[in-house]
Amino acid sequence: MNLNILVLPGDGIGLEVTREAVRVLRVVAEKWNHQLTLRAGLLGGIAIHKTGGPFPAETEKMSREADAVLMGAVGLPEFDNAPPETRPERGLLGIRKSMGVYANLRPVRSYKALLDSSPLKNHLVDGVDMVIVRELTGGLYYGTPRGIFDEGDAGPEIHAVNTMAYSWSEIERVTRMAFELARKRRKKVTSVDKSNVLEVSQLWRRVVTKIAPDYPDIELDHLLVDNCAMQLVLNPKRFDVVVMENMFGDILSDEGAVLAGSIGMLPSASIGARKASGVWTGLYEPVHGSAPDIAGQNKANPFGAIGSVAAMLEYSFGLTEEAAAVNRAMETVLNTGRVTADLRPTGTPATTEQAGKAVCQAI
Ligand code: IPM
Ligand code: MN
Image 1 (cartoon, protein in one colour):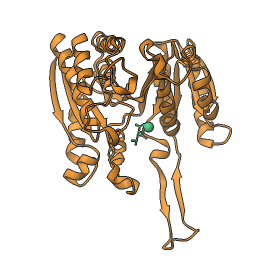
Image 2 (image 1 turned 180 degrees about the vertical axis):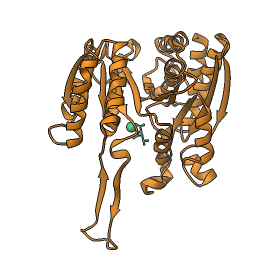
Image 3 (image 1 turned 90 degrees about the vertical axis):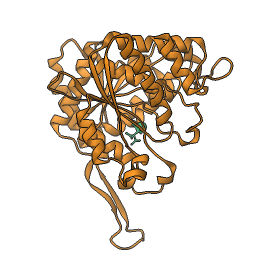
């Protein structure tokens, strides 16, 4: 198969972790005889520095030409006080919207070797295996009107507005994705909302309830988001596929990271439409951020990025055997204890590069 991939390392540790992810991709391509075509592009703070904007037209063009996009992370501390529209993060929101990747799949699972890395008791975490399906191109992140309205004065009358808006079709397509995914898993969907307060959530619940009969084999339940936040740490094994709007998913997936032992472990797959070629439009990125505090030190955990490569192989290209091999190789390395500093290594922590090379070896 020809794997035509755009790599967007982005900022901070994004560079280091995507380097290892690409190393793994090359090994997979060689072993299974796939032809790999890699291009690199700019996104985020580095794109602002080099082109003046976080999501250059050239990057947008390349993202359309590629079969799949692998991203590192975006964000630089020098932009901490900048308004949202000029920040590196705007590049990420731009590419998600432009590629139309409306369903963000964030698998959260426990690894035996990492049970002690989680602050939760082992018996709660052992066996956790869920996928958070986060709506990614709607809600508060994109709704208008938005802005800070100061009407020329800087007094107590200043107000700021963001808008949470969803259409029926936006809710329907992401929840259908969740139901389809559940069919390949333990056949359970939990829909998360705040329907006791928000109209958007009432519509969300109405849509989910309406389409549920199309999936009679799937067990559905609804949880309010605040209760879900609590259940995630009280009884995380109850969850299989958990679907929710954009910002709820942003928040709860960081909470989910605690179950996996480190946010450095979490991959993500953002899926859109199926292309004429049969390949699914996909943007793959670790859940973690650019971590400027440890950038350039060769100590970031590359497993979130490598896991994102596995997700790419599986979801965009349908290469399940290759994807499973990558996941197995990561697990093998975890069991050796030679892992990066965030995972309580036995002995000297592995560097980012050593962890990446170890996964390649194990494949
Ligand atoms: C994530 C990140 C992004 C988001 C930021 C960097 C814009 O936190 O992917 O979870 O909020 O979506
Ligand atoms: Mn986040």
